[in-house]
Every structure is written in C-alpha cells, then in structure tokens.
Length: 206
Length: 268
Image (cartoon, rainbow over all chains, first blue to last red; front, side, top):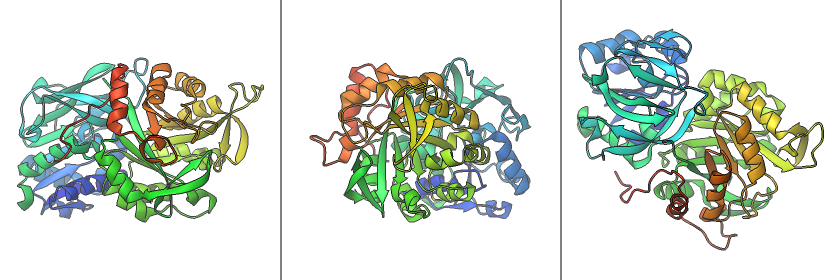
C-alpha cells in the first residue's frame, strides 16, 4: 500500500486518483499511525512551504516520517512543495524544513519571469534512476511553483529545467525521490513516474 | 522553456456540458464526464469546468460532477462557479480540483482572493473576469469594463485596474473572458488580452472567441498570454469544423510557438 500524506492544503486526492487509475493499492493517510502499513510514502504538495511544515508538525507527522523514511528506508516520493520541504530551509515563509536533502529553497527572479511558473516545461534527466524507467532523456511535465530548490550536493540532482534560470526539477538521494513538477497532473508521462514509484515500493503487491 | 497551454473549458449545467453564444441560448453537448475523458485522451494541457448555474441559482457547486471529472483527468483541473467562501474552496479541492476560479464573487468580496491565496496558495486562485469593450472614460481608462453574473450586470470597474488589484490581492492567474467575442468564433480580443498581460506579472489566460487554430496562434504571437481557452473548436456542433488538440498544436508549432509535444502513445 502506498500512503499519501493528506494534510489540509495538499492535493492528496489528485494523487490518489492517479494511483487508482494505475491499479496501485493506495490510501490517504491523515495521522502518523497510518504510515505503519505503508510500503511507500508520497508527500504531495500545493501551497506554501511554511503552511506545509506547520501542518506536518501540527498533525504529528515529522517523527513518524523520519522513522519510516530515514531509519527504515522505505521508498519516498515528494511532489512540488513536498519536494521543497525536504531541504533545510525555504525562503517562502522563512521556515526551517525537514533537512533530509542538503540545500535551500529560493524564489524565481521576478524581474526575469512571471511568477508563479505555471505550465508544462521540459525536464532533462541528468542520470538514470529506477523512477525514470521507460522515459525519454527529456520529457514535459506540469509545473506550478514560485520557489525552486538549490541542492548543495550536485550528486543528488536527477533532472534540470529552465525557467529564467536553470534549476533542479528532480532529485534523488538514498530511498528518496522528489520532483518539483506535479507527476499526478502531467498526463501519461506523469502517470509513468508514479507507476515506476509504485514498482519501487512493491508494485501491485505493495 | 515553459510552453504555452491549451485549456479546454466546459460550461456545465446539471452534469451536462453546454455551449452558449454571448452567454445565452445554451445547447447540451454531452456529459461532463464523457467530455473530460475524451479531451484528456486528446492530450489537452488543462481543463476548466464552470458550474455555470451555481452562481445565478444561489446553490452550491456540483461536487459529484467535480469528482467524476477528476477521476478521468490527469492534467490540471480548475473549477469555478458558486464558490462563496473558504469552505467551498476546500470542498472543491478535496473533490479533486487543483485550482479555483472566482469571478463575480471576487468582485463582490475581493477579500476572498486574499483568503483563498493564504489558505491554499496563490497558485490555486484563478481570477476570472468578464470584460466588455466600452467607451474610454476617466473611470474606465482602458476602455474595457468588468461585468458579473453571466455578463448581465456591469460594475463600472476598469478591467486593467481590476486585474492589477487581483494580482496584488494574491491571484495566481488571470483569465480574461471577452463578452464581445464569446461564442462568436471570430478570434480572441487581442487588445484587452495584451493590455492585461502587459500590466501583471502572473500568467494570463485568453478566453472567448477562438474558432480555429489560427486564432490561438494569433493570441500567443500578439500578446503575453501564457494560456488560451479553446472550447467551441473542440466540440461545439455550432461551429463549421471541429479541431483536435493535435491539430491546434501542429498549427502552433508551425508558427514557432512552444507547446507540450504531442505523444504518439499516450497510454501507461
């Protein structure tokens, strides 16, 4: 079973719809106890980094997530703000985040581009990874973001994208993968990424 | 680079997609669910669903249809119509939508833009505006006035000023619907789309009047619009010829406009 963390501002239902379409056993998880049965965890995200961190803290998720993801090493996928909060700090709301990946989160230069970035942009993969199975060297995904991550360790970068500047649109580190774009809203290619993640977590038997 | 988006827009009444001419004389096309399934497979970039009767009949949005559409649409999905407060927004997002479009309600209560952006993030809030060309006056210097309630009530507000205010209040996108062009298949209103996109730094969606792929190319070439709504040319029987998303994208590519490429095998 894939557990999708459901906090008030997130778009967990969209992720659930996509996994159902793929026939992957999955459910929304709104309390830390629900993470125990999960073979893989998805942290979706819309809204701000601060609101997301506040929700995760208020709902008591942080310790349970660290136990399952960092200590036990089950497959984890962060999406959009669920990607950004994996880093150490976000300028959005000036908030300290989970710090599972080294780096920080900054705003796009508003003098160069419209903010938020909203739409389909090209994602160029810089190395191979199981979550990219059957994808081409570059694919288009749907982005909605005003902030972007700056990893301190180039080795964790999985993909790059240009929006005024070039930024890290996907990262992978140990058992964790994360994407700035919305895999659940990126048509057939996005569904492939979710399917690959489900396979990493045990597929239809997860 | 970021590509230009094609958005299919459904006006829905009691679960059926309808098509209007200048906001009147609706005809039914098919169920929202069937249209959504078809247009997703046709590789549309995004979908908007207006529950057009919710507002004028003072009832809540049709969440059942929102859920049924969301189950088939794995691209961004915006819902509008009849949204009055944060609870309504929350219900729509929980039903599977990504964004909320607010129009007449935002004119009556501009604070809802700020509240929605604070609660769900500004990317969630699409400020949709109905604009009509009028004589330029000191009160309406752009020559475009904002109307509400299905273009039935005129507000005396200047369209460009309202767009700028909407951005300041926290809207993440602005959808510019031309009342003059709605359902006419004669092309988008280039002037107001351009004026608004030049005056805000959030994405602008052009809406109203597209009748063929050339109109879509024109609005992207002549204005700063980030997205364009196409509806009639996709499915309306009231138009001479319907086009597929693929045909529209081919036209845009021919004109050098960046789009999400068509994929031969769209199955997973």
